[in-house]
Image 1 (cartoon, one colour):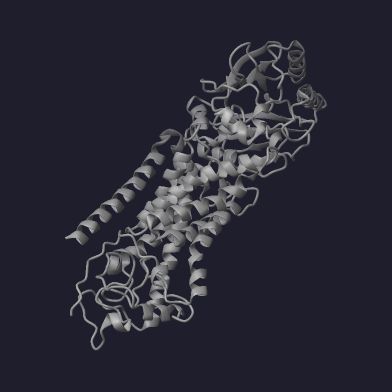
Image 2 (cartoon, helix red, strand yellow):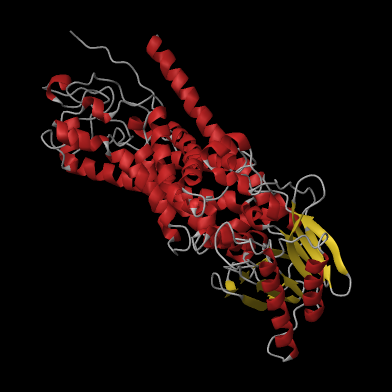
Length: 620
């Protein structure tokens, strides 16, 4: 009796190798954990690429490993593997969120945010069998990052791949297309590395097996394929592929075919070649050679990001287009670490005022240059100077002493309504003349959504007894003739919050912050890396004054020229370049992200269409 074969589209759901595994049970069980372990490990390696470690180069290998785990998987498996990768990445990255409030908020945040990585895993699995799949897969990752940066509660973009690349080769791409393009380049390079390795393995397997698999439509003389394990028309031989990779039926199941699908075995029905097997997916063609298309795609996936980064180097410019400004950043320190850092609110204010007066003394003695303006951190005065005359007097005295406009971070408490996290421009002899209210207040930190529900899991929510409300005006202060853009702490993670200040004329950016509640964790270094990326993205110097450190002054090329230690009082004074030109990233805004999202949508749509066509073919 002759067997009738059914055409299979390359986008069809693959048969899991474990379903046809003939290896002994113990080896079979170990193989089942290979991809989950790889997914978890890829996430952890990605975490290791983030500051304070200078291991940015680990990010592409992390994506290569993730590509191996996801390529050719079912959609459900892709979601699960993606979730494991998300946990491996976000659990260690965000451990600082539980520094003072216990593990429940940390675990809950990581578990929710990992769902976005899980969705990316599903999407990558879906597009992984398309030609040029590394490009679509990298687009899917950026699409998931974009969603994570917007929902829920306004989003949480912490951990965007771009923020781990402040020391990296790809950093100049931030000036071209912002953090989305930078992250896309890293992911694309990683997926391209995996694809290149996969094709190299396929080529070695061909050489070891002594020739190509039987071409579609050809016959295998002298042996019934299904009974002997020899390749049927349009299929690969499991025996030859296993022998090529060193696997045997006694020790392990045959590896996946080069297109990511499990090989045929004695128990598997014959089928015709998939698109991937006939050339478009990178498996041997009729001639037995790995076709050019996938080789070109793999090469370009690696070379395009590297070449693009090198080509973008001229955009990284720290020249002084509009002259220079001498800026001072004050780090007054706090009386204690943790959630109770502001229990002695007057002590925090006095610390910053004292450091400012000390700077004034150093200027008078010619030990420091006279600053054009001075920047205090977020929450440097948790006492409302509008409502408390004594606090206003302390600030005014310090500002008069230094003789320069000073930005004060204050908590403003109106008689009714919500609190305001406010930056105040304080002029010597004039007092407060302008304010900026933080526009993106932090959920579960500055305000508590769903307070009654959250209280069930953690009573610390009641430490925030009165919610903060967001402002609605873009922050740009004119400080002694210099236009300074304002992004308060958490806002540095959001593309729009920083870009808005530059498009409204900022020649320099400041990110006043308060990290005292996160102790000596990695959080402050992760946040500092964001500011370094923003410096290159918008070609602006960035000054980061922090209550307890790490404070820093960053040039437009991302170089940190001055930096403090954590939980020590200090003052930084530096001359920085002022710039007014706009990078392509600044001018284009969200366009690069939208184009990458469209690339992802095109890949997902193409994959869905191929699956529909394959199902129709099977039912005919």
